[in-house]
Image 1 (cartoon, rainbow, N blue to C red):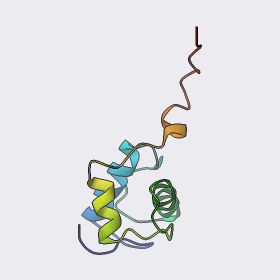
Image 2 (image 1 turned 30 degrees about the vertical axis):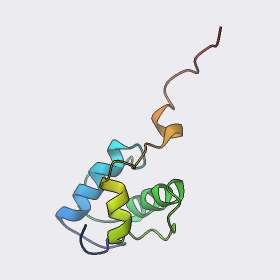
Image 3 (image 1 turned 180 degrees about the horizontal axis):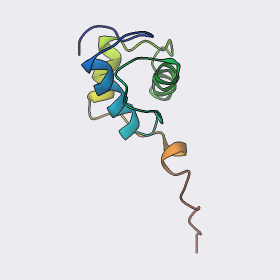
Length: 88
């Protein structure tokens, strides 16, 4: 956990953030190392799904959740390509 990552942030922390959000299914863009609109949208989605303030800024506390064991995938996005299982 380090500095707050927000729109227009750049560098290795942003690439790491994008990679983690992509792993969890929140970010669909390229790993650019630049916090752009798509990255901010992914941050807001992640924050909303984890009960955090969905302000599009990755605070140190938000990053602890993101990189911690309690972070969970975006179920809708993760299973978008998988047909629903039939019961019975």
